[in-house]
Image (cartoon, rainbow, N blue to C red):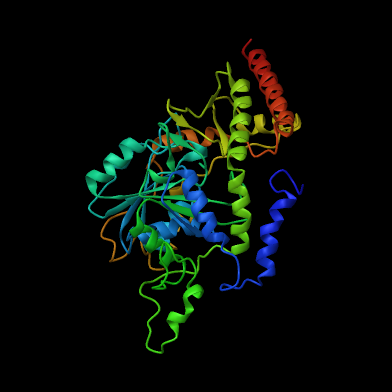
Amino acid sequence: MINWRFKEDDMGRVRKVLESNFSATKGTSYCKELEEIFAEKVGAKYGICFNSGTATLHGCLGAAGVGPGDEVIVPALNVCHTAAAILYQNGVPVFADSDEDTFNIDPASIEGRITPRTKAIIPVALYGLPFDYDKILKIAREYDLAVISDNAEAHGSIYKGKTTGGLADMASYSFESSKHIVTGDGGIVTTNSKEYADKLRAFSFLGYKVMTSDVGDARNVKDIFQNPEYKRHHTFGFSYKMPEVACAIGISQVENYDFFIDLRCEIAKLYDEVFEGCDWMTPQHNPDGYKNTYWTYGVKYEGKDWQGFRKKYMKNGGDGIYAAWTPTYLETVFQKDVFYGKGCPTHCPLYKGETNYNKGLCPTVERIQPKIMQFCTNYGSIEEAMPKIDALEKTIREWDEGIRVCSI
């Protein structure tokens, strides 16, 4: 055994890639295999691999036709990568507020931000919890908008009995090192639409005409190119292909998919027990019929001295807690109009709207974000997690005693 994620047997496929000397015509086809087994696992017809979870989002936006001045609605409570991908297409991020209890994007906030320039919605399954697909898809169909599900943190999530890889028009997953399954880096988009799959494939590799949902490497059909008059590139694209060696690792990860998901869910149950009865720590709410797969365990801290609690937890043996991200529109880069020069795309002639990236834009997010604590679920076993759980239980007990003493 190499470690809890990787076994010696996993090296077999990696070795075959190396033995092939990365030859396209005589090598392996692990990327195609990974696409097929992952798509089946999450309930979609097609899977297209990319070299990162951010590239997957960029590819989805390209496939949806997002271009200069088009608006895309995203949650403000999220890592900034999602909004950044919109800027890559010269689109304009429009930030929506979140639900107080689930922390996910609020469908009512989405509808209030739709304009004639809106092209797509990217709801995020925050921390592993699916968003409200029914309400968001209904809004999207009414206004003819593409829905791109950011499932980077939600491998294995379930919404009302359905796996979530095929519910939206496209779903984006990450294989980055903190996620449920990892390949070092990389990602995949799943979809039930062949049209989207074909566009995603071309977008992932320089717009080659031969690249389709079924053809993942232009070099495999290179005889087609042997004509001086042949035009290879029929659209614009990027060099976003996932390396074959990473795909080899990915196959082994998908083979152990249920183990990785179930382990995080079991660790989450330990957190449930710790927070039960603590009236100043409120876990992320999981509505009935939603399966949260806990990329992390999110809690709203209603006590005093956030940093003081963190320091005591670490002193007791905890691993430090992670703060939630600053609301994206309040990040420095969104305050400076430095994206492409001259204020583009958010302040320039091609965009005839007016962005508002000021404090007060998303009041719920601004209220809950400073309170959120993200507890780690990325442990290799229950035994590895238990010392952290015990440290948290001890810290809550000591903090509770301190609160009672101060109130006397």
